[in-house]
Length: 483
Figure 1: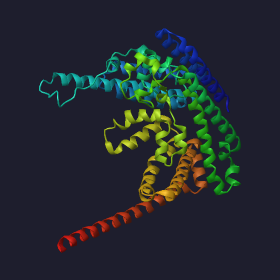
Figure 2 (figure 1 turned 90 degrees about the vertical axis):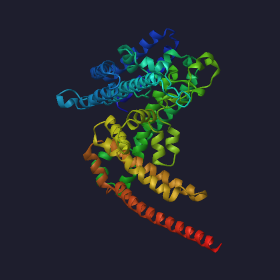
Figure 3 (figure 1 turned 60 degrees about the vertical axis):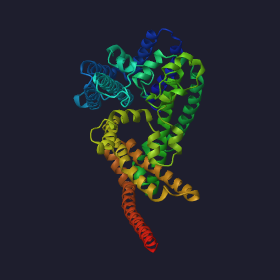
């Protein structure tokens, strides 16, 4: 581990320890201030003078949220925050020092939080306007047309202040590694009593055990199969094609173990503070929070069972065990996926390009290095291939045949993740091209062959189905004539 990684882990552990202190603060205004001061302190420790980027971007984003009309503030803030990422990541072209990786992660999360609150404000404003127009319409049938539901939260979003946005942005919970959470989740932490009744200590201890396990796997695997070896001349001159191809498996395993460690520790920051805890009856989901009305649950808060689903960013067990690439994607980085789904996929004006736009936005958000695009933009290529073969061989399989096919799909899933993920880690075009060339681009070529074969078999299958249908229709007609 590098010195930056050590400092990073120490900061995360410090944030976990701060949770027990933060929970004891009774004055909610003081608690908010303390949480954000801690967050700013962590940002400065990790980033040094690069913290100015975070301050400048939040200031610009806050101005966009508050000064631009609610009908347009979401697009303006999105442009400002994602536009600042260009300057932030290319700052070295202007003769300024390059930004360290951990500051990049902080800036990425600030981008989602500030632009996310703008999207929420616009959506709430549209609901308020639609409700007003509905009430003015004296000709509507109140029995057939239900009233548009408005919450106090919708109204509060129109009354946001710069102080609230800044406090939310720099809250120490999630400032380093996430997870992403809505402004509503942040607000509920200070206004609802759920944090005082959630099993914070138990949940934190359980997650810390897993963090130690993931970290041990990372350190061991990284010692045995370091990524730097894949950049060495020995790797390309002395190792076989098969060895190089198989190296993608431990490489991506190391990446997963490292990510799991960081994300699990970041969840511990939340659980120790009681942040993101909601009663089971609220039907909370990752990133979004409660999907049912939950305000009334505070009256007997001590009588409910609680969970921290809202702040779970990656469902590790599901990622590892699921059979397909598509399923694995759904369980990975789910809080960020929620943000992308709500603010990009659902709002993109051209329906047939929504998926492409969402993946492009994700790749852009991750960075400008070629590896980000080789990896992330490879997903919309592989998933349709997987779906096609699922319909051909897996969908109707049962018993032992289905079990064997599931295992084959699982192996293919992890090969695809590892093959594309290696590009993410190698980062530069030269490194990626050198590696892929050394294994004769076998991943892309095999996928192209499977696409061609799958299309051919699909065509044959549909032709056979049409023949069977015509035969069945002819048989039915013959029986009717005989009668």
